[in-house]
Image (cartoon, rainbow, N blue to C red; front, side, top):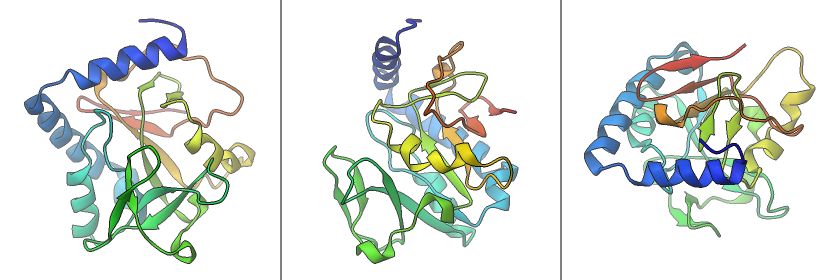
Length: 197
């Protein structure tokens, strides 16, 4: 695998996009079982997830399980003012969705209904790659890192917990962590559940 983050990002995204519809469906089913059976998911009430884009694992089964278990579901929304952070909007079955400037669907809600990451128990995060230390390789925009920056200043009460969602082939050796990177609590894949210290 390439060591440069941009090369690695391109290679992993390309591999993700080559999966057949059947492979994607099977992986999504396995990930949904692994996520919804995890202790973090079961102990959490206010859970943020994401809608898949660019070959990311389909989360619709997870979203349905959140609703069935009467937990409160949120989706990320790009900040309308600073444009470099994420807020979170409650997602109901009848919530209208519209594409943001990257073409990713997000809830259409009044600004007063948006909440910060601090108000959530668990965030299920998309990623491009991850390593055995909880370092996450994202799409490169830094939105999650900036939105979760407050976690770097906490020594206890680490809320929200952060679980990455990935295909197992997205696990790589030794990502170089940048000073602004926020490590994950764990990663759930179609093959395993990884937790990090």
